Length: 253
Image (tube, rainbow, N blue to C red; front, side, top):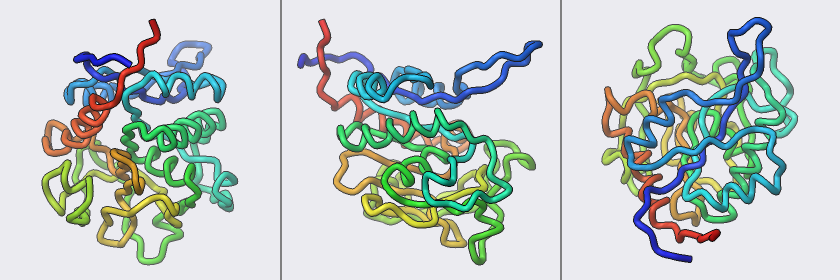
């Protein structure tokens, strides 16, 4: 291991989309807002493609200084003993495998991790938790959380209450904040290795932290869409990058 002052590498998982070409072809990528937030926080984003073997994924994670799990489609319900609600959509079995492997490996390796929206749900499922397959339709007294089709992505839909002694409160510098809300699923049963650190007005869990981990934080909202309109949200990415910069660097020369 050698000391270095280089910017930390943040491994970002990707998703599969069909291109607009005719005939369409599969493309692996990530919304630029995630990459821009990592860069603004002082890190270098590195995209981790789907299709890698579990062994290659673990090797790639070992060479990253931190990990970002982004938002996206739903997780296959059978993985968390779900029932397969009609509103479940956007399932990609390979993405589920890749991101669950990444989440478990990052936790095992004590690798700094920021999980966003689907990423929070992946982290919970990877560690043994379950999900509401549709919050509004299945969770008692639930409020409307899915504003993705009705408002801009930086629309502040509701407040969340944050535990004062949490990593989240430290990174944001506050114990309550307004957030955007672009999801229809959420945490039902919290994994044993997670601590809930923020809730919405309807008591849906909005943030989690891995217990006994130096920096493993998940949020249900999309802070990457708020770093300009709500600059304190950049604190989540800065926290990830700063924790990643503190990781020992492995030389492969």
